[in-house]
Length: 300
Ligand code: ADP
Image 1: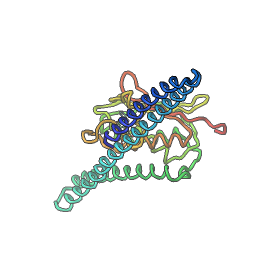
Image 2: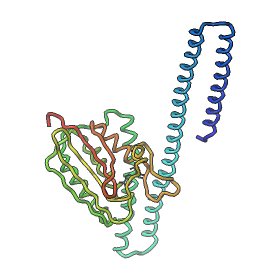
Image 3: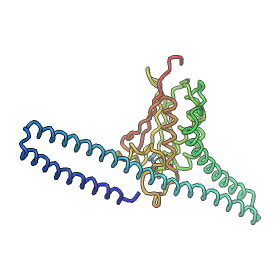
Image 4: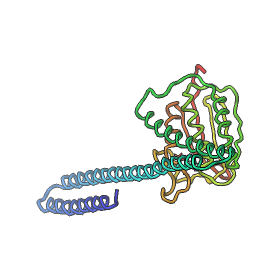
């Protein structure tokens, strides 16, 4: 949305206010000339004030709707830009790997290296498609979640082990303090996706070696899961928006990290489907901390 519809709207509202004040002044003036009682004049003024308040409230509401629409448009544009790039680049890279293997008489180790590269690209592509499908399914299908009793401690350990190689490649390491045997009523695939998205984000959005911490503990009322890193952190004015669909910090054209802005939206939706809450905080002295709390059900 360009800004001029909003300017036209402000001009119109301004015009209505000026006209209204002008007519208001005349009505009051005329009433006193016609000798209306002071009570009647105050009634006219009172009604005028109510009208102005309603007009102000309406203006604010319309302005907010304009702004929301504008943000959503911007985010959708970002999404299309990033998704096009995210889909095209692994496909091109897999094609290049395969063409090189076909055209050249390569040594066994080189072929191994190239197929590993192609497989990694393939994984990237399939995780992007999974995320897009997951977001669509969760929005359109209320029965998408399959609840069962699961061991969250084991699930967390499994996912940390799965991300170990990726962390080593980034010269980072994941430390854990996971209380054993914590059971939750949840959907295994969805909770796995929460952990993977948060761990991938920690690695993806900061450069240099990182220390990622994964904690899980049970208190009297809640199960607390936290995933934190000592990376670049998230500015306070962005903290509310990062969970929005397609939202990514910064401008798409100059951003270096890969992504679509769907990750944290999916994470939040999954946590809420499990009746949990997610918060983002600063990790001190530096970095980001995501804290998820699940309520403890009485039959656990
Ligand atoms: P994506 O990772 O695809 O960009 P997400 O929804 O997962 O989208 O995250 C939204 C934005 O929040 C990211 O673009 C990034 O700027 C910011 N962000 C998320 N996690 C972290 C983190 N651990 N450290 C710093 N910034 C983060």
